[in-house]
Image 1 (cartoon, one colour):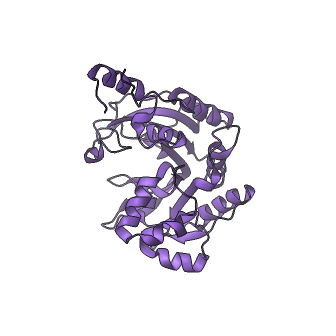
Image 2 (spheres, rainbow, N blue to C red):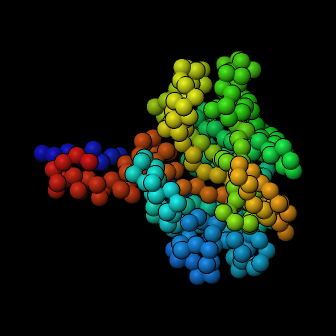
Image 3 (cartoon, helix red, strand yellow):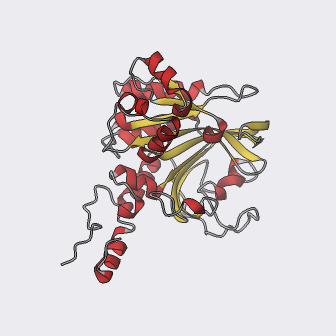
Length: 318
């Protein structure tokens, strides 16, 4: 009898995760809004809604007032084609959901970082292992935006509450050796990154700001990877190992400017937005994969039943 590898016991199902996320943000005072149509009604710049914040842009920029208030959350259905060449790996999809929450001048860095850590690590919510949680902050552009030491300090405070030390270090791909020498074999949980990774903005002039990405080390990898694995690898191998094993699960964007990006993906031509806003996005399927300890989105209950049926009737392993 053919036995599919896709018959799996799930720790957290898709419906459970979606409900947990929305319930958490409702408990913090957010209004839960429905997913907007895939084809935007009033945005000619895109064919489809590509992110949860796409329908929220008029409210973030002060062009309109949202009828549900200034603290919002939802699970938005999206289609994205700009990374279509990556579809087929363990995490990229053309159609996906994005969990999101927004503050339109209601709260800023301190609150969202506190709530992010609470949702991810509290036993009342997801209860993830905080030892496997890593974050990044913007390193500054050397002109008009400094390193985001404020966000780094808030993250350090949250780690301290959990009894953990959180050192700040540069991008792994640039100066691992200096980091190891400075930190004496202690893990840097907070990384400062360039605008390529940690400055969020649209392809054209519009709302933008520094961001703080959240990453999770897969359960089958050692927590001391900085000293036990990375020093043995070349820079290229190191970047690939990190990409394969430390997975982005969410991004907090501190959306406070109108501006553009230069050729190096750094911010230019900045002006202040009417309010300091928060735009948080979590890739639903990728997040579901990581918190269940899987290697691929196709192991989640969103895909596994269908794939098991295909395997059953084709009598072949996918």
